[in-house]
Length: 481
Image (cartoon, rainbow, N blue to C red):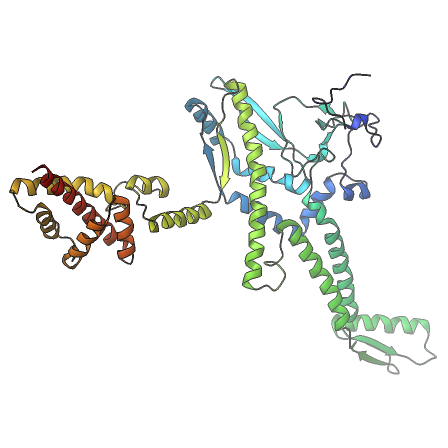
């Protein structure tokens, strides 16, 4: 018996467990639905033919495909990042993403990689999903291909040949959790309810025709009358013997029974929507705005979880490319994100920082929001504008030999076309005199003139900082004298 290290080796394994015996076969899928049916994962593929199931699957996949995706270089070398980016442009990413998302439906989705040597590099030229029922896991949770040559145990797959996106895999269940397993019984009962509902509607939806013949009528005459009654229901006309009669009887009081079938079908539809979308507020149930909004938030959480499965598979592919070509160098990271949510979050953060006194440069607005050169007329931050204009004002005042440089620069600002600031000069000078730092002056200006438009507030701050700078120069000059 081999010695087991208590620290580095696994003690609780299938090989040592009393509850497992491999018997030379692969590990069966522990899915309770498949075990009860005695079938493989293909039974779930048939469920997608239902209109509601198919629509929910398309909606769930579309939510992920609608996200933005891209490559973050991070700490990767420039050559590595460019090679990965060039590789990704040759792949049909939208199709690959859709196939990776099948892992949420079946629990796992093996995807075979076709490698080729292009330009001196080993790169994947295609990634194709293969039927999950062709694959199995052994006692060591390794993926195997159930081939004709090895139908009992399966063939062990080579490294870096198959991606294996899975949803919530565990040691006990390496096959992952299949969301379609939650739809099996609701869909089965829905189909049964529809079948009985249709039979009920056919039986009680139209009037019954009752034919009457004398007791002495023969079996042949009764059969002819029955055919005539069937023609009456189908065509509305019939021929009967002159000594017979027909009576049409309507079934009353059956609407409550019909409602039972409808409620059963609607309940099953709601269960399917919950299984695939996490909610049924936007599909079946009559919901108010609050409950529908909460349901959409749950759907977004499912979308984000699906996006993580896709990102994990794509980053695994990228790491393999780096291992084969760049000696395991640091790999860039591929990710998906909701651009609209990020824009709203960043805008709220920038507004909060602006209200707190922070001012941003044109470079920041261009980098954060994608503006181009020439889109912004003036810098959102006051400091750049002051640093350009203040020295010119100061030099003009000192060269003029004015006894009061501060007043001279104030006059220069007003003469330069500042918008109706004549009444604010005294207030600005008071704030400048009270402030002991540039940051304190900015906060005081925001508190005093926060109601102004952003453009006017920027100009006002530029003027105030110019006054503060000139006042400092005047105080320094008087101190020297």
